Amino acid sequence: MGRIAILGASGTIGSVLAGRLAGQGQSLLLLGRSAEKLAAVSAATGQPSQVVDLQSSQPLEDILRAASAEGPFTAIVNCIGSVLLKPAHSTTDEEFRRVVETNLFTSFAAVRAGGKLLRESGGSIILFASAAAEIGIQNHEAIAAAKAGVIGLARSAAATYAPSNIRINVISPGLIRTEMTRRIWENPAAASASTAMHALGRLGSPEQVASLAEWLLSPENDFVTGQVIGVDGGLGHLLARR
Image 1 (cartoon, rainbow, N blue to C red):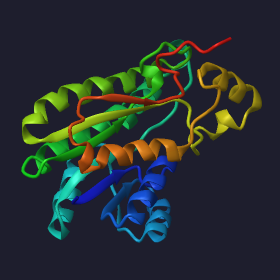
Image 2: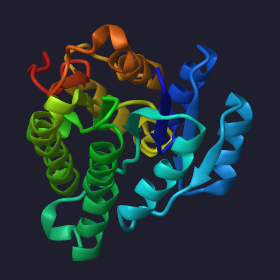
Image 3: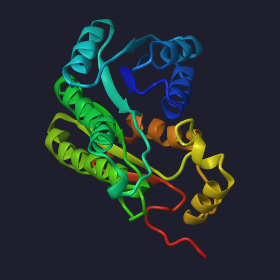
Image 4: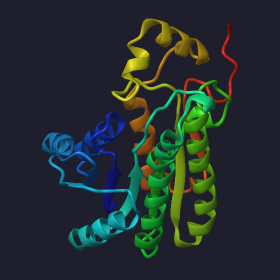
């Protein structure tokens, strides 16, 4: 397998995935917004990192094209995401736009870059949605809309780029114990309510999500594309027992 670019590599899931892949000898490029956080993951994994500004899509393509001189990329994983738990009437226009830019636009940038850079060699693109995009959960309007957009983007792009042997899949987590969601799972009341929504009666770990990403990246599983796979304890499709 060629090099793998991980967007949002300094986040919990991105850093766990980077550690697992680097431990197998995989060549990576770690990308994100914070030079300081990226440096920590880079030091831990022995992999190079670079800051990228994804307010527009061109910088990502430029970085990956330049880095390809050291070895071609065969996969892009977009672990960038955010959480906003507000009803629509309390969500400002700016908050909504920020959620869409953080979750949907970065996914578009990853697909756009991959559609250009992976067409000759083929490869894999992994995006992240949320169980909230597949089942109505109160106060999730902005994030549900953005993540539903990611699913639509992925399925259309998977059809578009299948002739080029580019596989595009989506991981759809439930509530995972990450730094981003810490204020939820460290709050006893919020954690209890969230746990009760998952049919398995527990929350997920970053390792469980990273394990699926690792599986999707494996050449052994290159007959999988256009799929939305839940790592959600049943949240997206099962009615939790009350």
